[in-house]
Image 1: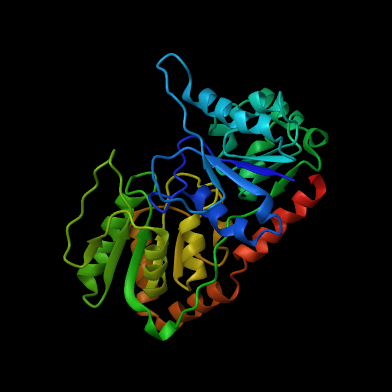
Image 2: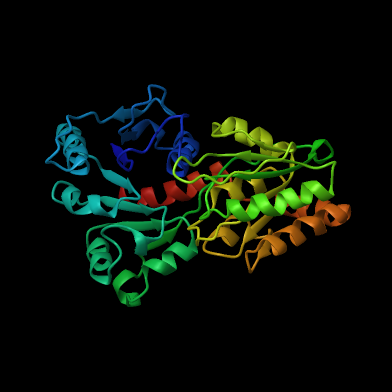
Length: 345
């Protein structure tokens, strides 16, 4: 038996700049009862990989030929040697047509808004995907609801499923948490970094016993803040990020955009942070008990942070509630994935 997991082209399945898709697979595959039958395929220039059962699809690149098509062609070379019982395609609906010619046992995962992705934005596209897949999996109810816009229930009945991202619940000591406010993610306006920076610097000026840690980068957009207790660490691997979440009192995920899910909010919740999120997209599903910002402004975010700083009991109650009710563990989600695999292999 063979289950092939096909990553998006250029996804870094490596500790170096690992994305949400790679981390999701790294966490769940080792816990699957099918782990010995799973082969991950991808294309990355980094030597260190997240799992041993990974095959790098290297191919010659030509100016006149699509790299994505070459990537699929390279994958199909392995598929012709040994046909998969199941192919799980992550976040690339445009791979479906080419793969369907050779293997009709296809599962598609959406990690982004389907309406903003190539080959799934139109109703016609989504109907075609439904016809050519055994099942489509979404990382939130919000993403699923985006997909079914304009479709009739009979067209997708029993073919759609929500499986959230996951992480391990961290072992923490609430008494050892520091007066830290943490932001993790791209340092751009889409993620609300400009709002975060301005709000938090106002907080730091008012509360000298508090600090802020920022983890992430953004080469295409420069938003700069300067404060001696506002520390920017740049990109860090997931293990280091986890340690900072365990130390932090407050975590902020204040995206302007409608996040399909929100891995940062998930990780912060698993480490018992007091989480503040914008009430958009799938973020409330990633951290259901978080403090929610209905309107993203500097003043609103500053007020939410200040309420927690001033009221220690409220902050501790929120932290413990978020931590207690965290259930999206790797083991739980891995079992949900295996439950659908059982139907097809």
